Amino acid sequence: IKSISTLEKDFLDAHKSGNEEELHNQLAKEESEKVFEDDAGMFKFEFESMEDYGDEIHYLGTLTCPDLVENGKAISGRLEGRIVFYKETSTTSPDFGVQINGQDFDVFDFCEGYEYELDSFIDYVVQELEEKED
Image 1: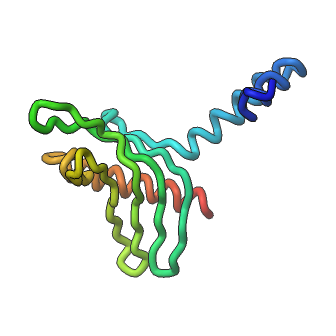
Image 2: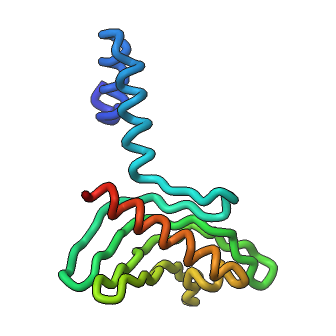
């Protein structure tokens, strides 16, 4: 029992008490508030935390985008980073990337030709997160 996670323990407790449907609904609600996907299935953002710097808000998390093929090898499009929201101009900037064998790749390497779709998705995520804050 010591090796199971808190979530697994909560599930077992809920099942024991007959509240598994309530726990499932709570977990689904929490996930819907933290995971954002575009309609085409090209992008997904898993929100982890927010940092407010006064003039900027950083939404930290993991962005999943199309894999990149570099020199015949696929590089996973699962990128750690942040969405930076500039309050004064109400603009956003995605800051995601990965380093492979000493070479840096940023989100735009993965989304070449899909910059508009990426920008639209980032704007959608920020709008949703701002609404949840209110």
